[in-house]
Length: 140
Image (cartoon, one colour):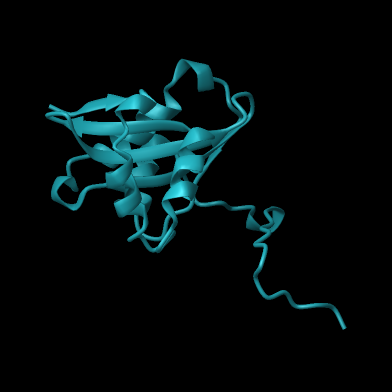
């Protein structure tokens, strides 16, 4: 049986850091950054027999918007619906009910999130991104 919990005291930071430091979206991330990200987010962990096998978090203002990030399932537990269950848990939290918009970015897991109502952005021209430190082109 899988237990999904928002209790941050249960999060196994060594495992989470090791997972995230080896992903395509945060390779080599420092542990202190992971800790800060967790402190500023609503988090869920998935556990089997007391061992953490999954992690996800939502960055939110708690009123209008949430960004789902760092969804990760241990390789040995993949394909069992755990990632989807964690995101469903986040989107179903009473304290986040009524948010106008939930967003996420994925390179390869569209099928995980589509059944939860996530869809590609059609009005992509409305969205902008700022990446501090990235090389910027200047208008001539």
